[in-house]
Image 1 (cartoon, rainbow, N blue to C red):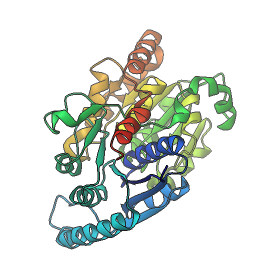
Image 2 (cartoon, one colour):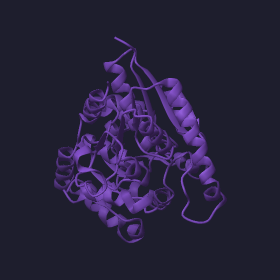
Image 3 (cartoon, helix red, strand yellow):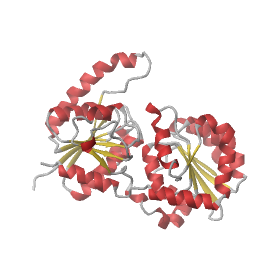
Image 4 (tube, helix red, strand yellow):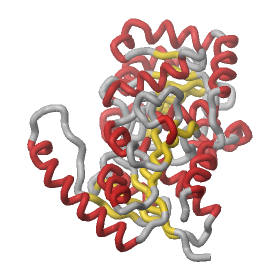
Length: 363
């Protein structure tokens, strides 16, 4: 059998990168001698994260449009033409069987070029409200794998496949890793653990909240693991000197961090929401209001509306945080209900189901 070849593109944030890596890993386990190439934006985090996962990557000179008049926007047409030309070179040279896009700027020119060259394309949309890149690409895509229902208003109905979001396979069974996790993070098994995650880049408002509420949280006999993001590490690392608090910029072992957690405070990026549904820990979502189309609020509401999590808007944090958090940690029935309802929404086979759609397109 000839060697299969796949190009994957997605980036800008972990929410686009990690799904692409999960899909590549699943394809590789089915086709061990297949060849893989990633395409990203040349100054974004995928240029580090993808090689760390063992895959080659090429960078395009591309960035998104800003919402105001900037030099960046004036450069956009030039960057777009440059990226379309480079995408054409990459595809002609690599000759992929299928091209897969998981969102982010770089996937736009790449999948657009694949469509014009009649190479099958698959879009994986993580959010409950699609970004502009995927909306534009959907008209020509062969299959669109989605994680939320009711996306017919954005995508051609006959191409939509409800798969869920790809997640790291190592988080499928975190309960069995509890004791390993407690020793890995040097935690006290007699205390409950609060995990605070602001997404791959960190979250300024969540960091401000935890800094302000640190004594309130510790007075509830909690130990805290606080992922603040690389951007903010210098501002908050001194809190690691506080007893029962660990501040980290980035978490490599997400499986163990989830295994150790009893409660979670999190942004509502699509990948985080999908992972948290699998692990089913009682969660308070604080969606970022600064993302396109407010899709984090929509992601969180899809869970909250089915009684799977709690939600506090950023604008309500000062007023509501302590009362909502108090209720969560002192009401065991609430905790149990949230966990059970959240787990019902999980899609543990998402990555395999997406790969099924890709395999169907191999000529």
